[in-house]
Every structure is written in C-alpha cells, then in structure tokens.
Length: 312
Length: 188
Image 1 (tube, chains in turn blue, green):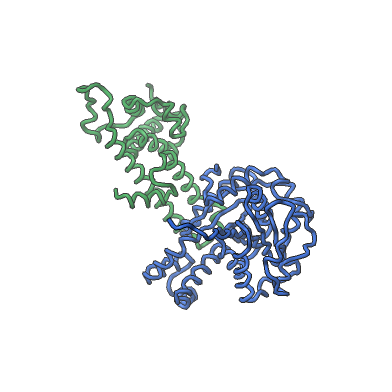
Image 2: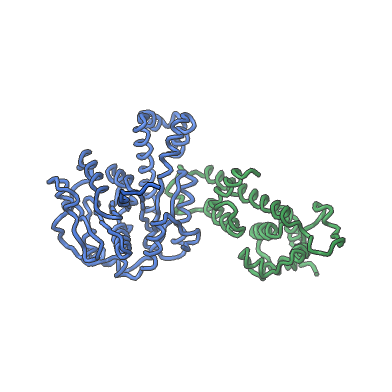
C-alpha cells in the first residue's frame, strides 16, 4: 500500500441556521472548547458579519486583530489568528465594524474561502451568524460539516427551513452551472407555475425525470448535502423530540437527509450573560451542560444521530 | 418480497431494514401522530406541505407498516411454524385450516403457550404493559383501551406471535364490539 505523505487537511465545520438568537455562537465556542480539550488543533472564525461577538465568549472585549483587516487592508487570514486562554484553541475575530454582508466582493469571497481552507488547524469552526444571504450560504456550503442551530420555536423553525432550502437551491444551481446547465434550472424555476412546480423538491424531481444525466449528476453531488441539526435551549422532552420530527419532515418534503446530532438544555446563565453582553467565557465549561456538549460533539465527529426519542 | 422493496418500506418508517419490531411499531405511531395533527414543525411549510400531501404521506406510512408486519409474519411462520412444540401426533385441529380460527383472547394465550413465551417477555419486547396483555388474553374488555388504540396493540402482539396481524385485530375487535353492544361484560 502506498504511504500517504500528505497530512490530512483540516475539516471545516460551519454553524448557521437562519435565525438570530438561537445560540450559534454559544454552540460554536462550546464545540471548539470541547474539541481543543480533546487535543485537536482548533481555529474559530467569526463570520457573523455585523454581529460579531465570538471574542467576548473568550474574554476579549476589543480584539486587536479582526476580519476588518482582511476585508479592508488585504491582510492574510492566517495573520489574524490569535490564541485564546485555552490550549489548542485560537480565534479569528469577526468584523467589528458594522459591515454589511453584501459589501463583500466576489473575489474577496473566493480569497476568504481559499484561506479558510488553508488555516493551520485540524478543525476550523465557522460561526455564520443569522440570515440567508448568498455569501452566508456559500460559506455554509464550503464546509465538510454543515451544522444548523435551532431553538424550539416556530419562527426559528421557519427561518431554518428557509435557510436549508436556499442552501440546497444554491447547491443545485452551482452544481449544474459547473456542468453547463445553469440556465435550464433558473428558467424552469422562474416559469415554475407553467411546469406545475410548487417547491424545490418538485423542481429537483422534475429535473431528474426530464434529464436523466442531470439526475445522475445530482445523485452524485447531492449525496454530500447532509445537514447536522443541533437543538439549543430545549426545555422539555417534547422540545427534544422536535429534532426527530424535523428530520422526518426534511426527508419527506425535501428528500434530504438530516442528522439530529444533539441538543443543549435551556440555561438561564447563558441567556442572561448574552443579554447583558458580559465579556467572559460563556461556553459549556461555565454552564454545566458538559455531557450534552460531549454527546453533540461526538455525534458530529461521527456524523451520528440521536435516536427518535432523544437518546444518544 | 424483493429486498429492495422491503428496504423502501423501512425507509418510509425511517428505520434500518430489520429493525426490532418495537421500533417498527414506535416509529409508526410517532410518524402517524406527526403527520395527522398540528405541529410547529409542519406549520411553517404551509401550502408547500399541504393537507393533500400530508394525507399521502400518512397513507404511505400506513401501507409500509402493514406490509412490514405482513412480511415479518410470513418470515416468522416460515422459520418457526406455529404449534410445533407439542409432542408429535398431537395435532391441534385449527392448524389444518387457519382461516377458520377465530382469534379470541384465550386463543392468543394458547398460541403464546404453544411457543413457550411468557407474558413478561412479550411485555418487555413490545414495551406493552403486562396488565394490558393479561387483560387482552382474559378478554376483560371493560379494562381495555379504545378500539383505535387497541387495534395497533393487537397487531403488534399478533406479529410478535407470528399470527396474521390483520385477522387477529379484526377477530378480536369484533368480539370487543359484540361485548360493547351488549353493554354488559361477558361472563367468563
């Protein structure tokens, strides 16, 4: 067997989900801390454009270096990595000026992705912040593991569906664009009424049935489109079981697999500290949900699932 | 049934092929509840997941459940025919024509005894209360749940014993109805 000289490149995990306030930053910092304690080299990247606060979770109130330097001064991403107090865990602070997501140019975006992939880490965790802007979706899609964080309430669920649907649509368009079929997809979608198509699943089904080669391409490319779901701020067993229901609905409605990776219970201390913008470490070590974070992180590593009843 | 077809049925119930019977049952109940009621998981999808679509999903779930139970049942009878426990020659007359069997409570008990399975084992495996199983076999109809719930419990128990689930449920519920119509519990 040939020896593998090449060191396996780091994995990128992106954490998004559409709605703000579901605890993406809390989950990002907690997962990062867990993985670092486990001995992995971890870099956290705060891509929450306009709402960056990951640094406050590590007791940094005014980051000296941030993504601002990357976007405005062309600094290289690897120069913006700063260590935290935790061994193995470093951080790239977000843009603390209120820059809008749509101000990022196409070439900046490509450069950013290239440099994220080259970061010297075993796991890069990218906190995406809220919203379903194309730049956010693209960042979500470059990841090896696409993670959505959800709070058990109807608006968050609605935003998450929107986020997942848009991600999938974008993935389908990008994939078919690479094969030269971009116009077909957009045309059919724009004229969907005359094709009798009401949703994304039907569009994909229509493409599969009408063009067998597109079907083959999609089967191949979409097999990697797997979402990992994290339920945050759960209060009871009913909340915990929402994960299994969402998994079922996404499969029966969009035909895409979702892993229900884990949940974290509602925690008053976290909520209060976030609201009061307390600049200290708010990750799981300070809040006593260590077991839940461990189960979640291990499930994410293995792409494993909770069972239907929320047991690991 | 071809393996691929069977796998598709398990996919509908969101289970790996040959999942334990109690998972088949639990999954069925869970999904049936999800797609027949109001849920904050379905509400945001609105017309994209219409009533019509929900109905179709429910039909698929019910079909998959029934077919899996039937396949399990035929497998169970093939691998381990009923009533082979007794000494040779001691034939049970009903075996000759299974269609003529009426599955009453005592008949279920007889089938279970013939397989040498205790009620405790059934209760543990199917996650059904021991008391309920006892009451089913003793036909203490006044203690049993509504027919709609009882039906799935009977089917589950029947499949476990390797008996035809639909026939067991039909026979038993017919007796249940007869009792109800008389409004006085039958004397055992």
